[in-house]
Image (tube, rainbow, N blue to C red; front, side, top):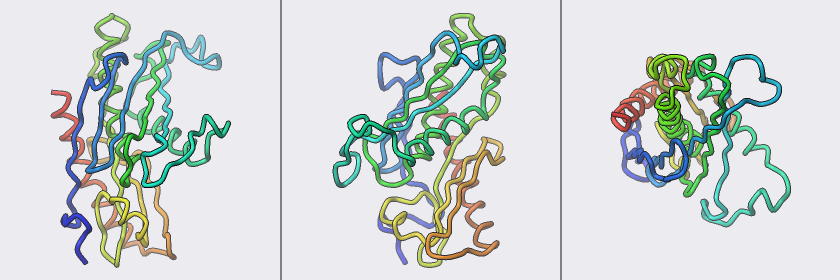
Length: 241
């Protein structure tokens, strides 16, 4: 069965990483996976959370949110509701964990970097786009610290690997890469794969939405995820060049 946008099963949507999209943060990137658009900003502050003071280690964390009309119907702002939803918490923690896998927190010193990932427009894969774009924003923020002699080491040692993420899934029995919304809601199996630039796994989230899935299907999805992440790593390198 043909994909809604005519792509091959193993083909990413067009990917764009626009650096320095916002003039104020130490790092900012507008990341686009097809019609999904996420603004990722990296803000540097001196000091670390109270529980980390005196450790000599820095800290990297993330916050994720969606604009009210990022989707086809308006959603209330969580600030108006008075609490952050479980999905938002989950994705924020995923982004933070993923990005901490690429940085030497000791070399960062007792500095903190907060990655804010705000979904401007959603068409599937918002969390994977956020991770991919946040890596580039984080890289720029670390360079900002290096320019101010605030790093204990060179940037390439502090940022010792790249991190990227992509969604995969099975629709009508076919493994597919980088699901758009129409595919995501119809997926029999849905998975998010976070990889390093070397093809190692940081995190895998997979669910049989309408039942169970076989080991060979999981292997096929992981292979697709690694393939997609390799292409995203090349896009990140090109953006940072």
